[in-house]
Length: 460
Image 1: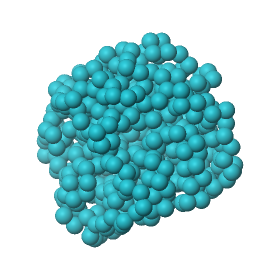
Image 2: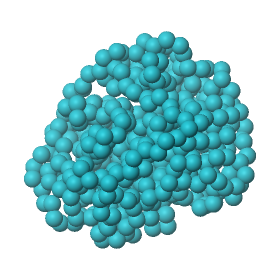
Image 3: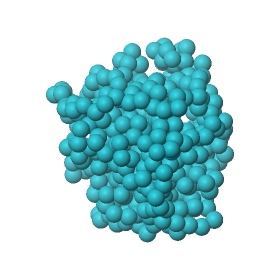
């Protein structure tokens, strides 16, 4: 769920990035967690089935656009809250790939907590209105630099290649080849740089018209092209139950799907929150298909989904997120739910073998009729051998109007690789920010810096 991001960007016409340098290697650390792996349609920690029982974490919201894992004055206080809750995974939407994260990531590892990271940020992301133009070398340099920044940590569980870039308008499905190409490039980079296997997948919007096509699309093609997992943001459970929420139908629809599946955001504020979603997520009704989920969200922002209020941090993206933490009533409710409905023992009825889906055909809600993906932009190919170099961080020049683009379009046809592109009203889809399609939850204002004007619609 998170806010829709139709952002008007005021950015440089071309993006500048640092030249490649040798990739930094891991430093020894006190706590090493077992990496999370995939077998069939499930996650595993060692030989035991692993369920995501976590929370979405972005103090200040998208408008703040800060990196909570680069500041111990922010993260260490919150890690104590995570331990009190009993979560095992957090999702972080904004990280600065030019900064050091050792202290926060090591503290999370000491607490036994894994991290799922969005590889995009507001300035470096796929543009909904011009996906071809925004899939370029500066963009991938930033994505790869984020991988470099976090690959050394044993508790880096996974990266999201995109969040709700595809939405409820048919033309947004034209972004799918570029997000999937990024997904492919990320896995290729991880392998080329000789990092351990780190999972890469997509976080989708819960859009009835194209969610299943999206799931099929990210699981079709060659093994190199297929994602490691699929996730989506679901806000349809409003203090209801497995059937009233429609979750039974979603389990039915995804039965037999060949990748691990989980909820990258879930929640509803229509009624008092009792987090009964956990009962179903940990129940045999769902564990054969789903591997848990991330509750939206930790800190109280203008959308009012938070369970902790940060003193001085509610000014729609205040840069200072170091204020005192106040636990709201929902904090204890979520902690109680995690205790009441623990992860089940055994294998949960998972499917032991994986399988590819058929690529979806073009129809009234899906504009892509080809399985061909864009080639990696020519300027980015060197990164696989040389490394990405120093990341541009959250305040770099941006990549939306760079000129080094992919050499093929989504249909496999040759396209111009020299002309710049980008609309004045471009849609930057890097950040979380959807209005839930199922329950029309309140619009979540999640703008990005003052340079961006968030306009609406579901995005990510």
